[in-house]
Structures are given as structure tokens and as C-alpha cells.
Image (cartoon, rainbow, N blue to C red):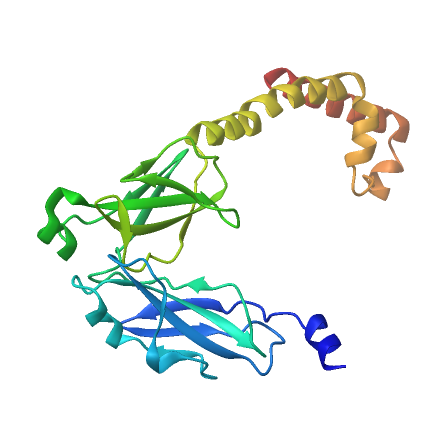
Length: 270
């Protein structure tokens, strides 16, 4: 029975929203996961080997102080990740990111224009000061919800679809190798160009009136009586003292003629 249960058991889902700010690493448990512990690991620039953080092995908490890992790398920059564990089964590890830049993680600002996205990066960070041109940025980008593409040292991304949201992740590189914690995804909406706006305005204010004008003119010129009946809200009532001494039919015919004549003149002016 124990063997059957072990074979049927599945590893826990990976943790979510893994962040590190000022050496405090936090994450969230996946929904509906119980009896799960977490292990945090670090990797230095030189070794590229993932090692357990001593104070963060199989802990039930969803946060851990990883300040001790700074001493594990001569530059003070390590990569961090965490994975969930339950009954000796481990989830896929999730790498931490930094929402706000620091000495080991880039600070990212975005500005979107029609068809392009500009990534604003600073070149005076500590890695650049100490390593000059050997320190660069790796920029990964893609549509929101899709896998990101990699592109080294890019600050402008052209050829993007207007009206779509794009996300960017940036990480420092040293001698073409990634170092430190990458930035968290920063997303921006690519605005539509003014050309599309002018097309819409032209259709609304020029094309539509050009189509409606002859139609309205035709209706008023050749269907005057019918339009008059539609637009009349209240029937004109002739005073009794006038109707007693005047032919009602002639008055109505005169009013109808003047009304149609006035409407035809208005249509001519349009």
C-alpha cells in the first residue's frame, strides 16, 4: 500500500511571486497546496552550482533572510531560487527577481511609443564602475503571458504590435555571463499611432456626412409630405372663430405648401 501511494503522489506545484528585496526573499504558496516546505538555493558567478542556503532548508515559512549569501561571491552578487517539497518530492525551482534595482539587480524604466518600446537603463551601477565595458545588460522581452526572448544590451525594441502589452526582464551580465538577480517583469501597453486616430476621425466627420447628406436631401425633396407627417408632433388646430368664416381646406393646403417650400429651400442650402 505504501508503494502504491508513493507512486500516485505528485510533486507540489512551484511557489509563486518569488521576490527578493534588500536580501529578504519572499514567495507565495501555490493554491491548494498543504504540508509543503521550501528550500532556498543560491548560485555564485564563478561556481554556477546551486547550493542550499543553510538557514532556508525545508522551512514552512514563505520568506527567508538571504543576506548571508552576499559573502559567497567576491562581487556580492548571487542568483537565488526556491522550490517546494513534500514527502521527498520537489517542484521545479523558481528563480527570484527584484522589483526595485540594487547593486546586483538593474533598475528598469519603460517608455512606449507606437510600434516600439524603449528600456531606460543606467550605466553607473557598481558592476560597471568596477568592470567597465565588460558589464552589460541582457534584455528579455515578449508579449505579456508569452515566453520572453533574449537580446543582449538592447535599449530600443522596434516592430511591436500596437495595442498589445509587452513585458521586459533585465539582468546584469559580466563577461557575457549573467550575474545577480534579474529584474521582475515590467510591462507596458504599446499605444496606437496617430495615423489610425486620423483615419477614425476622417471616417466619422467626413465620410459619414458625405454619405448621409444626399440621402437626407433626397428624402426632404421627394418625400416632403411623408416627412412632414412624421415630424409633426401636434396637429395644427385652427381657432374656432377663424374656421367659422374661412374655408378650412384652403388654409391647410396653404400651410402644407409653405411648409414643403421651406423644407425644400433648407435642403437646397445643405
